[in-house]
Image (cartoon, rainbow, N blue to C red):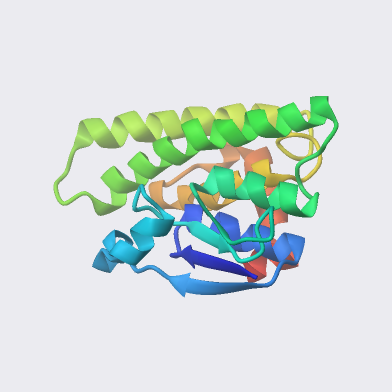
Length: 200
């Protein structure tokens, strides 16, 4: 059984989608980040960076419970546990890991900052809005060019797509002109229609 500690953010949704895709049983524990529940001492034992998501696998690699924090690490852990959505073949595996890191180091932080400055900042910061929205648009362009060549970010559907699509869905918040990124829109709509993604 997987104990999932999460909230309804793009990073949180990655893991519930992954769990639905691989068919592992799980229980959800809501961590209301609007009420600072991520700072509770019990949660910090699981997630020392006081961020969601985090999991506890009651049947870890040696049969004992293991906790895992950081969404990318959780996706890799679950993929390796189930043998799904992260290929073993070296060339295919490195492609998935490249695009997963693209999300972790680029899409997540830049889209997150764009979301913050455009939707949540308590004061208007035009520089912040422009800087992070421009970078989000650049990253969408990278993805659109990639998806002109291939159906999914790393070839077959993988943890790279699961990690990235929830962030792209939030791009609606800052008035993306999808006519500029039609392949990204089609890719994300296709992923969003998957039953496991909808359940997740």
